[in-house]
Image (cartoon, rainbow, N blue to C red; front, side, top):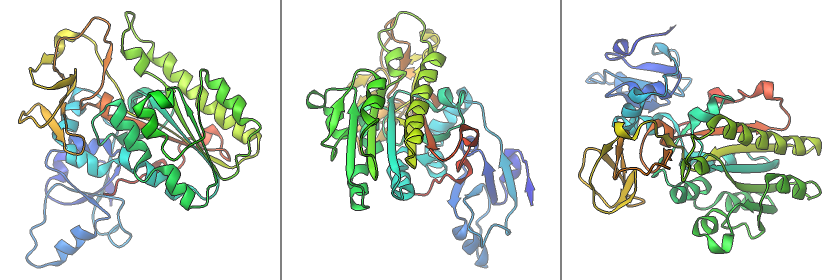
Length: 367
């Protein structure tokens, strides 16, 4: 049984949730079950009282016909979803693919093809999804450049895991000077052949004649973060996103032209909360503020969520730790749709862009 149902019809009985995982964040008090076997087992016990807002995702074949299914539509990325993301963080983290799971996704799918990971500095899911269909991914650490880059490569790193899987060439391209930048040193661990570049075309030119069989290529590149800070003019978001898309397709074109079966992944370290009117933001005075949207240490404040792994407290949407400068057009470090939802764009060289929805329905959000 499949239906499109409003949320109030899901409050008394478990359902299989299909469609938009983002919509699950709007359901207060929801419990997300991956597979649904735990829900089935609880129903099999005579004393069970497991009723209510239980949303089953990625249903196990053994339960796929036992519960009604509902299709959830994509919610708008607005203030309502902003607040729900902060309020129902655990539900969203259970339902969505998390940034820390990206290494697992890459290493699971790599079967000897050339693998490319491109990480844009500051790119929101909503900004890229307006131009190409991509998968939403939740940043499950503070939305800072340092935390995001470390979270994407993981520990052990993607390079180390692919080495153990038989990959034999590892190439890095950084827009930072590796020896002078701590973030680059962490991001490019286990990739000794890391080169600093000025223009993206330099990367394409370098790769033209390289042996890239069973190679892993990791690229850091500028994106919208440069539009957010120290800018007097309004940021040209759409133009910058188009440039990112063109770079991805340029690299795909090269690998395809060379006849190299390749998997390309584009994601970002964090997104951005664009500032419309600073007057609409509430200033929260907190000690140890490290940025306009986060501070160091644990603070017992309802406006914050603490990430123990990083020792950082992140502010909810609409709050800042200080008054903004006139040249601050975008912020990150806190929790909001703009900051916390990033894209994962997967491409393969043996498919055309008309197949850009490939595997979109198969994304995972297991813990």
